Image 1 (cartoon, rainbow, N blue to C red):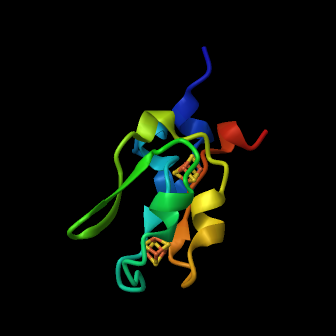
Image 2 (spheres, helix red, strand yellow):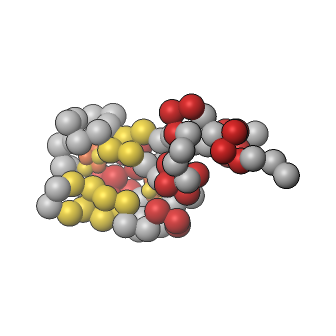
Length: 85
Ligand code: SF4
Ligand code: SF4
């Protein structure tokens, strides 16, 4: 049986793969403009007082829209290698 954890990139080792796929926000850069929330086609994100949050992480399909729409480039993704092959 394949050990899935052994295929996960070092930066995310130890985390469940479901937990690392949704967007990650660098809140030091975020201007709270809300573009990412508005441009998510799946309504996965929600704007809260502290900033954008991934409200439905299991439903994010990693289309990249939120990252493209961010004017300050503070959204990143960490994909497990199992999604890259
Ligand atoms: S990657 Fe796509 S589906 Fe996922 S939160 Fe961003 S815009 Fe929404
Ligand atoms: S688009 Fe970028 S700057 Fe605007 S709320 Fe989303 S993460 Fe913050």
